[in-house]
Image (cartoon, rainbow, N blue to C red; front, side):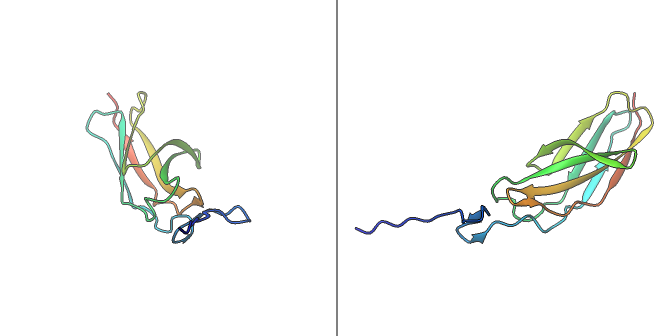
Amino acid sequence: MIALSMSLGVGNGAAKTASGPLTPPTVAPVLIVSAASGSTTANLEWTASDKTSSAGFGYQIERENASVFSPVGTTTSLVFNEDIPTANGETYTYRVTPYNAAGNGPASNTASVTLPGV
């Protein structure tokens, strides 16, 4: 009987899969943001990036504030809802960045929504 083993790591610490080295996603999602009339919830939807089944895959959602993007959440799905209870008439701008264990991929387009509030 012959025993086989496969090493998924390499000496320099880079992640490796059975099909080769793990690399960050390369496809930028296309983002759309909307809100229902009278809502204080931003509804984000985007197209899938590549490498969605790779180790550590997910999407980071960021919102712009004073020209700086800050994280507001992460998910592995293609939708995200952010409730902003004090959103009366304010505009919010978002972007989504795919990532995996090898690093970040390219960010989506930015998309904005004005939340009408209640």
